[in-house]
Length: 259
Image (cartoon, rainbow, N blue to C red; front, side, top):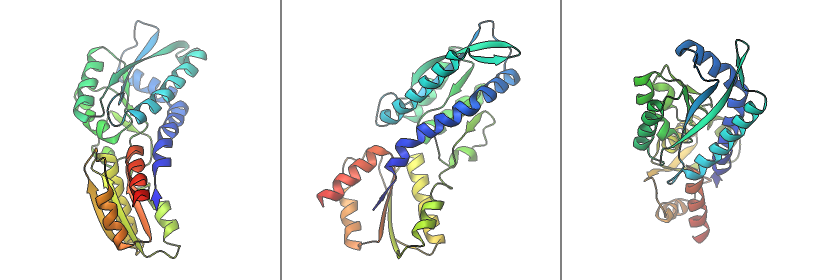
Protein backbone atom coordinates (compact mmCIF):
# COMPACT_ATOMS: atom_id res chain seq x y z
CA UNK A 1 0.00 0.00 0.00
CA UNK A 2 1.17 3.52 -0.72
CA UNK A 3 0.41 6.37 1.64
CA UNK A 4 1.43 9.99 1.09
CA UNK A 5 1.29 10.99 4.80
CA UNK A 6 5.05 11.57 4.94
CA UNK A 7 4.80 14.03 2.10
CA UNK A 8 1.75 15.73 3.61
CA UNK A 9 3.56 16.35 6.89
CA UNK A 10 6.70 17.54 5.15
CA UNK A 11 5.17 19.91 2.62
CA UNK A 12 4.73 22.86 5.04
CA UNK A 13 8.44 22.56 5.83
CA UNK A 14 9.29 22.62 2.13
CA UNK A 15 6.95 25.57 1.73
CA UNK A 16 8.69 27.54 4.47
CA UNK A 17 12.10 26.87 2.91
CA UNK A 18 10.78 28.33 -0.34
CA UNK A 19 9.37 31.34 1.50
CA UNK A 20 12.64 31.94 3.38
CA UNK A 21 14.56 31.97 0.11
CA UNK A 22 12.31 34.29 -1.86
CA UNK A 23 10.11 36.20 0.57
CA UNK A 24 12.45 39.12 1.13
CA UNK A 25 12.60 39.86 -2.59
CA UNK A 26 8.97 39.06 -3.38
CA UNK A 27 7.45 40.83 -0.38
CA UNK A 28 9.54 43.93 -0.89
CA UNK A 29 8.75 44.08 -4.59
CA UNK A 30 5.04 43.50 -4.01
CA UNK A 31 4.95 46.14 -1.32
CA UNK A 32 6.71 48.77 -3.41
CA UNK A 33 4.52 48.04 -6.42
CA UNK A 34 1.17 47.81 -4.70
CA UNK A 35 1.29 50.03 -1.61
CA UNK A 36 2.94 53.23 -0.44
CA UNK A 37 5.72 52.98 2.11
CA UNK A 38 4.34 52.72 5.66
CA UNK A 39 5.01 55.32 8.31
CA UNK A 40 5.93 52.55 10.72
CA UNK A 41 9.26 50.77 10.47
CA UNK A 42 7.93 47.22 10.17
CA UNK A 43 5.75 45.08 7.94
CA UNK A 44 2.47 43.91 9.44
CA UNK A 45 1.77 40.51 7.90
CA UNK A 46 -1.56 38.76 8.29
CA UNK A 47 -1.35 34.97 8.43
CA UNK A 48 -4.45 32.90 7.63
CA UNK A 49 -4.05 29.46 9.21
CA UNK A 50 -6.10 26.50 10.36
CA UNK A 51 -5.40 26.90 14.10
CA UNK A 52 -8.48 24.90 15.10
CA UNK A 53 -10.50 22.15 13.45
CA UNK A 54 -9.57 19.03 11.50
CA UNK A 55 -6.53 20.58 9.79
CA UNK A 56 -5.05 22.31 12.83
CA UNK A 57 -2.08 19.94 12.96
CA UNK A 58 -1.01 21.13 9.51
CA UNK A 59 -1.84 24.71 10.48
CA UNK A 60 0.44 24.61 13.50
CA UNK A 61 3.21 22.99 11.46
CA UNK A 62 3.04 25.99 9.14
CA UNK A 63 2.91 28.35 12.12
CA UNK A 64 6.17 26.99 13.49
CA UNK A 65 7.76 27.62 10.12
CA UNK A 66 6.37 31.15 9.81
CA UNK A 67 7.51 31.98 13.36
CA UNK A 68 10.99 30.68 12.58
CA UNK A 69 11.13 32.76 9.40
CA UNK A 70 10.10 35.93 11.25
CA UNK A 71 12.72 35.32 13.94
CA UNK A 72 15.48 34.79 11.37
CA UNK A 73 14.49 37.91 9.42
CA UNK A 74 14.22 40.10 12.51
CA UNK A 75 17.44 38.76 14.01
CA UNK A 76 19.19 39.81 10.82
CA UNK A 77 17.77 43.32 11.08
CA UNK A 78 14.69 42.95 8.91
CA UNK A 79 13.95 43.33 5.21
CA UNK A 80 15.99 46.19 3.74
CA UNK A 81 14.33 48.44 1.16
CA UNK A 82 16.18 51.48 -0.21
CA UNK A 83 18.65 51.14 2.63
CA UNK A 84 15.97 51.16 5.33
CA UNK A 85 15.37 47.99 7.40
CA UNK A 86 11.81 46.86 8.07
CA UNK A 87 11.20 44.19 10.69
CA UNK A 88 8.23 41.85 10.37
CA UNK A 89 5.28 41.32 12.68
CA UNK A 90 3.05 38.30 12.17
CA UNK A 91 -0.62 38.56 13.12
CA UNK A 92 -2.47 35.23 13.08
CA UNK A 93 -6.10 34.73 12.06
CA UNK A 94 -7.84 31.38 12.57
CA UNK A 95 -9.44 29.88 9.46
CA UNK A 96 -10.94 27.11 11.63
CA UNK A 97 -10.21 24.54 8.87
CA UNK A 98 -13.13 25.95 6.89
CA UNK A 99 -13.01 27.91 3.59
CA UNK A 100 -15.83 30.26 4.62
CA UNK A 101 -14.14 31.00 7.94
CA UNK A 102 -10.89 31.54 6.05
CA UNK A 103 -12.60 34.18 3.92
CA UNK A 104 -13.87 35.92 7.07
CA UNK A 105 -10.38 35.78 8.55
CA UNK A 106 -8.94 37.38 5.41
CA UNK A 107 -11.54 40.16 5.56
CA UNK A 108 -10.64 40.80 9.20
CA UNK A 109 -6.91 40.85 8.48
CA UNK A 110 -7.33 43.32 5.63
CA UNK A 111 -9.61 45.50 7.78
CA UNK A 112 -6.86 45.48 10.43
CA UNK A 113 -4.52 47.05 7.90
CA UNK A 114 -2.04 44.25 7.17
CA UNK A 115 0.47 44.99 4.42
CA UNK A 116 0.12 41.56 2.83
CA UNK A 117 -0.95 38.03 3.71
CA UNK A 118 0.60 34.59 4.14
CA UNK A 119 -1.67 31.77 3.10
CA UNK A 120 -3.01 28.69 4.91
CA UNK A 121 -1.99 25.06 5.12
CA UNK A 122 -4.82 23.72 2.97
CA UNK A 123 -5.89 24.21 -0.62
CA UNK A 124 -9.55 24.40 0.41
CA UNK A 125 -9.01 27.42 2.67
CA UNK A 126 -6.72 29.03 0.09
CA UNK A 127 -9.40 28.72 -2.61
CA UNK A 128 -12.01 30.07 -0.21
CA UNK A 129 -9.99 33.21 0.49
CA UNK A 130 -8.95 34.10 -3.08
CA UNK A 131 -12.18 36.05 -3.88
CA UNK A 132 -11.54 38.25 -0.83
CA UNK A 133 -7.91 38.76 -1.82
CA UNK A 134 -8.84 39.76 -5.36
CA UNK A 135 -11.62 42.07 -4.16
CA UNK A 136 -9.21 44.06 -1.98
CA UNK A 137 -6.05 43.66 -4.08
CA UNK A 138 -3.72 42.41 -1.33
CA UNK A 139 -0.63 40.28 -2.12
CA UNK A 140 -1.22 36.72 -0.88
CA UNK A 141 1.73 34.31 -0.54
CA UNK A 142 0.62 30.65 -0.31
CA UNK A 143 3.49 28.32 0.49
CA UNK A 144 1.63 25.11 1.38
CA UNK A 145 -1.50 24.61 -0.81
CA UNK A 146 -0.98 22.37 -3.84
CA UNK A 147 -4.32 22.08 -5.64
CA UNK A 148 -4.11 22.73 -9.36
CA UNK A 149 -7.40 24.62 -9.02
CA UNK A 150 -5.49 27.53 -7.45
CA UNK A 151 -3.59 28.65 -10.58
CA UNK A 152 -6.76 28.05 -12.59
CA UNK A 153 -8.33 30.93 -10.63
CA UNK A 154 -5.80 33.23 -12.36
CA UNK A 155 -5.64 35.52 -9.34
CA UNK A 156 -3.14 38.33 -9.96
CA UNK A 157 -2.62 38.68 -6.20
CA UNK A 158 -2.13 35.02 -5.21
CA UNK A 159 1.33 33.44 -5.39
CA UNK A 160 1.52 29.63 -5.12
CA UNK A 161 5.01 28.19 -4.56
CA UNK A 162 4.73 24.39 -4.72
CA UNK A 163 4.13 22.18 -7.72
CA UNK A 164 0.44 21.46 -8.07
CA UNK A 165 -1.49 18.24 -7.59
CA UNK A 166 -1.29 17.67 -11.34
CA UNK A 167 2.48 17.24 -11.11
CA UNK A 168 2.81 15.58 -7.69
CA UNK A 169 1.85 12.00 -8.77
CA UNK A 170 4.00 11.91 -11.91
CA UNK A 171 7.31 10.60 -10.47
CA UNK A 172 5.60 8.09 -8.17
CA UNK A 173 3.43 6.60 -10.92
CA UNK A 174 6.42 6.62 -13.27
CA UNK A 175 8.28 4.50 -10.70
CA UNK A 176 5.33 2.17 -10.06
CA UNK A 177 4.76 1.62 -13.78
CA UNK A 178 8.23 0.05 -14.03
CA UNK A 179 7.39 -2.53 -11.35
CA UNK A 180 5.36 -5.73 -11.87
CA UNK A 181 2.18 -3.82 -11.05
CA UNK A 182 -1.06 -3.96 -13.04
CA UNK A 183 -3.94 -2.86 -10.79
CA UNK A 184 -4.43 0.15 -8.54
CA UNK A 185 -7.12 1.23 -6.04
CA UNK A 186 -7.45 4.94 -5.29
CA UNK A 187 -9.47 6.76 -2.66
CA UNK A 188 -9.35 10.38 -1.51
CA UNK A 189 -11.02 12.85 0.81
CA UNK A 190 -13.55 15.30 -0.63
CA UNK A 191 -11.51 18.47 -0.12
CA UNK A 192 -9.72 20.59 -2.71
CA UNK A 193 -6.25 19.13 -2.17
CA UNK A 194 -7.15 15.48 -1.65
CA UNK A 195 -9.72 15.24 -4.42
CA UNK A 196 -7.43 17.02 -6.90
CA UNK A 197 -4.61 14.66 -5.94
CA UNK A 198 -6.80 11.56 -6.30
CA UNK A 199 -7.95 12.71 -9.74
CA UNK A 200 -4.36 13.25 -10.82
CA UNK A 201 -3.26 9.85 -9.53
CA UNK A 202 -6.07 8.24 -11.52
CA UNK A 203 -5.18 10.14 -14.68
CA UNK A 204 -1.48 9.27 -14.37
CA UNK A 205 -2.22 5.60 -13.73
CA UNK A 206 -4.41 5.40 -16.80
CA UNK A 207 -1.80 7.24 -18.85
CA UNK A 208 0.77 4.60 -17.87
CA UNK A 209 -1.54 1.72 -18.70
CA UNK A 210 -2.31 0.74 -15.10
CA UNK A 211 -5.84 -0.48 -14.43
CA UNK A 212 -7.70 1.52 -11.78
CA UNK A 213 -9.97 -1.16 -10.30
CA UNK A 214 -11.45 1.05 -7.58
CA UNK A 215 -11.86 4.82 -7.28
CA UNK A 216 -13.94 6.67 -4.71
CA UNK A 217 -13.98 10.04 -2.95
CA UNK A 218 -15.07 9.89 0.69
CA UNK A 219 -16.59 12.72 2.80
CA UNK A 220 -14.34 15.12 4.68
CA UNK A 221 -14.13 14.16 8.34
CA UNK A 222 -14.73 10.45 7.76
CA UNK A 223 -13.69 8.64 10.93
CA UNK A 224 -14.02 5.11 9.53
CA UNK A 225 -12.79 4.04 6.09
CA UNK A 226 -13.20 0.31 6.71
CA UNK A 227 -16.20 -0.05 4.32
CA UNK A 228 -14.09 1.27 1.46
CA UNK A 229 -11.03 -0.71 2.46
CA UNK A 230 -13.11 -3.88 2.73
CA UNK A 231 -14.20 -3.42 -0.90
CA UNK A 232 -10.62 -2.75 -1.95
CA UNK A 233 -9.34 -5.82 -0.08
CA UNK A 234 -11.81 -7.99 -1.98
CA UNK A 235 -10.42 -6.69 -5.28
CA UNK A 236 -6.84 -7.41 -4.16
CA UNK A 237 -5.15 -4.60 -6.13
CA UNK A 238 -1.38 -4.47 -6.48
CA UNK A 239 -1.30 -0.91 -5.17
CA UNK A 240 -3.58 1.05 -2.81
CA UNK A 241 -3.34 4.86 -2.86
CA UNK A 242 -5.09 7.13 -0.37
CA UNK A 243 -4.97 10.83 -1.31
CA UNK A 244 -5.48 12.95 1.77
CA UNK A 245 -4.11 14.72 4.82
CA UNK A 246 -2.22 13.06 7.72
CA UNK A 247 -5.41 12.37 9.69
CA UNK A 248 -6.88 10.55 6.67
CA UNK A 249 -3.82 8.32 6.40
CA UNK A 250 -3.83 7.46 10.09
CA UNK A 251 -7.45 6.28 9.79
CA UNK A 252 -6.78 4.31 6.60
CA UNK A 253 -3.74 2.59 8.08
CA UNK A 254 -5.57 1.75 11.31
CA UNK A 255 -8.57 0.35 9.43
CA UNK A 256 -6.30 -1.65 7.12
CA UNK A 257 -4.56 -3.31 10.08
CA UNK A 258 -7.91 -4.10 11.69
CA UNK A 259 -9.05 -5.89 8.55
